[in-house]
Length: 225
View: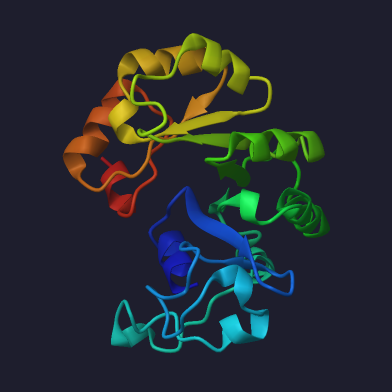
């Protein structure tokens, strides 16, 4: 939550988070599929109950200043930041491990009245079948397809882009795949492009020059120039 607060303070257009599910079925915000790297616990997120996850220190690994930071639920994040200027880019992390997670997220967004197409929420995943399911469930929420360099090292074909248009509003590729020609092809199909993960000014400037709609970055200030 401290990171999301900082993103809002820095006037980010969106902040990105990863959603998984606890053993007892609660939607939790966690990047890794295990808690080992960023908490004082161990184990798979999906094997731990919400109570167990909430007992972990998720801040000390980063800095003593954040000791006691807890793993938030998705509902807690939505409640805290609904109505702020920042949008939320929700990644479904490894949805193949969590059958039905698309419907669960869609239900929560509807419950919070955040399911309208107003630009404040985007749902994305590397699992494109999951995004097809999400679009069918909640077509009012924009969907993004994450595109890895490993899978698409030879580039994204026109046929693949045409398939994306059936359910996606955003194509969000690894930055190494992006040039102005790809940006133009995506724009011609009325989709937007948000490349990831940008960590230096040179990369940010090149992508902005290529015409991208935004950058997914660890450093929001890179997009301000």
